[in-house]
Image (cartoon, helix red, strand yellow):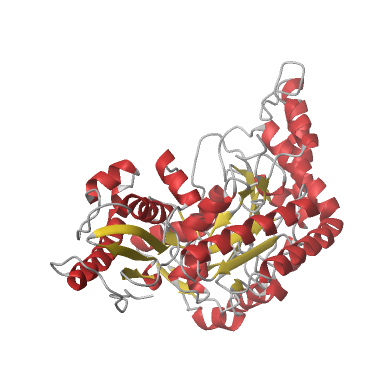
Length: 139
Length: 393
């Protein structure tokens, strides 16, 4: 299969790969390895702003590339339970074949699980404190 | 730019330079370009001599008689001619066929087409090592079974089937003719068509350093006890070539290439087998250091040039994407669309979808050297380690 330049670059470099811990860190995951795609995001939040984000992914190059891009884009952004771009926009950016777009929904679910957890715990005060990891998905 | 290390010799091989030179001599005005069917002049005579020499070379390298060789465009056509040819010829005797789930699509698809036309097909499952146990074939035979089609060497795992025992079972049954897809066999295994006892055997040139676009079907002329030798209904008509089994002008350059390629492969068989077995074991030992790797197929009953390995904790498409810049190998998935499908062969061996997809098939060949193997180990080790880290494994 051929990949566009963005997919190739983010798959090969995978910026933002890894995990986070400590105060203000929230975790969300979706999908399952047994079904071929699993994604996890950690977001570190302070005063309602994402300080940094990390991801882990078991999946195809598109899944890894999109997860890496989402994690990279997150730093400095206001916390919200949505991806920086719509699934359609991500599909276009990474030239994801229509047959594989369901995998982007798993990326989206993992991101929403992490950010929603942060939003719930931060509350209106947007003052975050250490919490237990949120949804783990199915590894 | 450096080309990737080529380890996909089970898919195809480069044409041996000696073969290419012999083929080239059949193409131009200075060479033997005549139609081998032209009996009225020297150009045809010369081409015919080359075609018959090639026929004798293929026959000798496979333990067959020259008049048992029917030229085709490749193993796929040979498989089609064998399967449809037997089914149609013996349609009044029976409409049952036995084959295996691990056969190549060039056997499975004709069988499925016959099912659509009213034949019944039994698809046998292999054991976990990939072997089709002969007693399972015996149990599958029915009174109206006309054909058993079992491959000699599996193209994904390299597992070798016990064709001689299967042939004996078919002979005992009487009505079941045995077809063997031996596309992977030439130059990889000592094959004696007469000794094995098969009725039909499909061959391919391009797996043995010959050209693409040519193959052969060996059609036994031996009587089977009180039965006549196997008969076929032709699939194409228009000239009566190849004993009227395969009409069409024989491509002199192609069959000359196949003949020489098979002769060279047969001559190199012993030394190559030993050399490739050592390289394969070096590759396996290197990959095994990763941990979480599984060898697919019975290691004791497989050819020396092929190694199929599943890697735990990585996704198949990403694994291939991570190695493809430096390594040319096949995966355990069929890229029939944007979505990859797990290998049906590995699934039949009991691997789950994820492990079937996360497998690599390494096909070693005549030009593979130790540094190629060391490169492959390094590239795969790096890719698998990185993908496992990305997956948090």
